[in-house]
Image: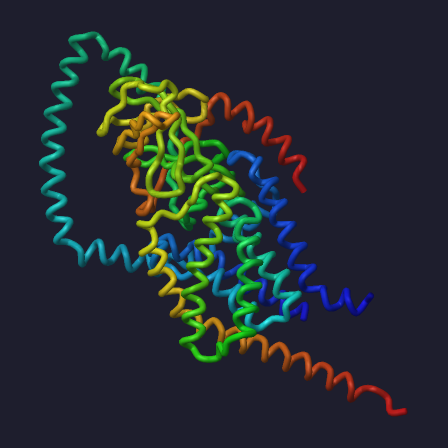
Length: 294
Length: 178
C-alpha cells in the first residue's frame, strides 16, 4: 500500500494542485475588480514596484534618448501638423464660445467645469501587464499619496481605467481593455446609452441598452456618470464599426479607445471617489478593512 | 532540497517582477517571458514533486502580480510543467537549439492555455489572429534566453548539491569511531 502511494505521489500531487487552482479560479471569478486584495497581494505589489522601476530604467533611458535626440525628423513634421491643428482649433473654439454666450449656455459650462475640478495626481507607470487575459498597470503612487481603490485614472486623451489595488507606495490600475472592466457610457451626439466592456484585445465593445438606438461609425463615446464610479464626460473612444446584423440579439459596436494603451508612461489619478464607490470602499469601510487585516 | 526550492522561488519571483518592468519601456512583444523561462528551467532541473509545487506557487505569484484571475497562471504552469517533463523524458534537450525550440513552443502553448482558461471562465477566446505575430516575436526573444536560463539553472543545482555533499562530509568526519 505504501509502495503504491509512493509511486502515485506525483500524479496525486498533480491532480491535487490542478483541483486547487481550479477552485481558486472559481472563487476569484466571483470577486469584483474593486474588491480589496489580501495582504500577500499588496505585499507583492509593494515589493515589485522598486524592482520594476530598476529593470525598466535602462529601457526608458534608451527610449527617451531616441525620442529626444535621434527621432527629431518625425518631431518636426509632427510639430508642424500640431501648429496647424492648434490654429484651426483656436478658431473653432472662438466660434463655439461666441455661440454659447449667445445661447446662454456659458453659465452651465462654468458649473460643469466646477464639477470636473477634481484634484489630479500625476503618476509614473512602473510596470505593465498587457496580455489578452489581463490588462493592468502598476503605478508609483499608493495609499501614502491618498490613492484609493475605485479612483479613476485618466490621461489628456481620455479614460485609462480604475485603481483596483493599492499598497503603501504603489497602486494597480485595471485598464478599460481588461475583460472585467465595465463602464456606463453615452454617445456624445445622440445621447444613446450603453455599457462599454473590455474584450482583452485592443478594442472595446459598446452594448446599447436599447436595441436600434442611434449610433454611427465615428461617433464619440463619453462616460455617462451613471453608476457613480466615473465622473460624467470622460472620453472613452470612437465608434469604429456598428454590428447591425438582424440575427444578433444584442446591438453592439466596436470602439477604438481614445487612449493609446501601449504607450502610457505617465497617467493621472482623480483623487475623488464616486458616491457609490465611496459607500463601498470609502475611508470608513477601508478603515474597517485595515483593522481586520494582519 | 528545500534550500534549492527556496532559491528557485526567489529566482522565479524576481523573474516575474522583472518581466512586468521590462514590458513597460519595451513593448510586450519585445520583452521575454521570464517567468515561463524560470518554470521551464525548474522543470528541467528539479525533482517532479518539489518542481510541481514550486511552479504552482510561482504561478500564483504571477497571478497576484498581474491582477489576472487567481490560479490562472498557476493552472497553466502546472500543465506546462507536466508537458515539459514528458518532453524532457522523450527527447535529448542538451543542445541549445533544442532548448530554444522548446521555449519557443512553450510561449505559444502558454498563450493558448491562458486563452483557453479565460475562454472557460469568461466565455470568449482572448487570442486574436492579429496578435499572433506579436506572440511569435515574444516567443523568439524568449527562446534566445532559454540556453542561458538552463545553464544558470544547472549551475545553481550543481552548486547547491556541492554544498550539500560538503556538509555531509564534514558531518561524517566528526562522527566518533566505534
